Amino acid sequence: MVRFQRTYAKIIYNIYMPEYRRVRIEGGTYFFTVVTYHRHHILTDMPARKILHNAWMDTEHRFPFETIAVCQLPDHLHCIWKLPQGDANYSIRWKEIKRLFTRRYLKEIENNGEERNSSRIKREEATVWQRRFWEHTIMDEEDLDNHLDYIHYNPVKHGYTTRAADWPWTTFHRYVKAGYYKKDWQGDDQSRLQMLSFE
Image 1: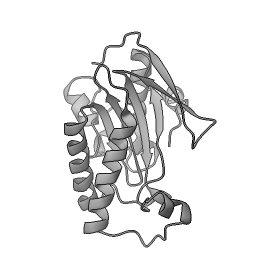
Image 2: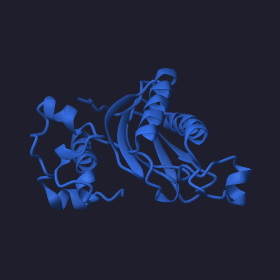
Image 3: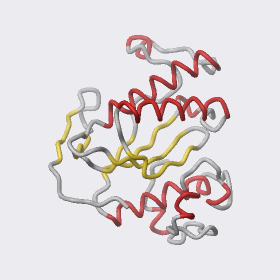
Image 4: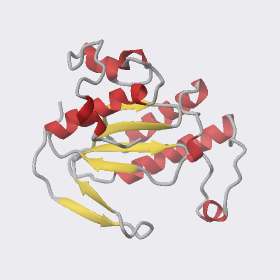
């Protein structure tokens, strides 16, 4: 389990989102939401799952991080990462995962028939991912537990299944084997889950 300690947090000013400041804690633990462009349902298709897995593993090899939890849905994914001590650069990791996935996906599959607007052409962006991502810094064990529940309950929340155990593309099964969840867990504290809203 992730252990938390007080670390120096750097507030990063984003010139493209001047009202938004990301918190970067070296060696920190982070929750992320990443969404496909126009919410296209591609991430649970077999070719896309393989391409994403390869992009994820390649990036993890070059820029190490630990995947604490993940849930992959058709149009978005949630995950929790733990970065190495002395490292707070999660943005480079997402940039690489998106880049590698996009290059291989467009080569092997398609571009969903979407035309790129002038902004995406200028930034050399394809129409596969939404720009940027949502990030939340995990602050303590309770915060971690809350986000683990949120991630693993997400397929039920979106109506893809009636039980977390029935969704295949999630770390829920790993946590059941570890004894963290019971197999029939269905998001016991609904009021607490409703407080978390990240899609």
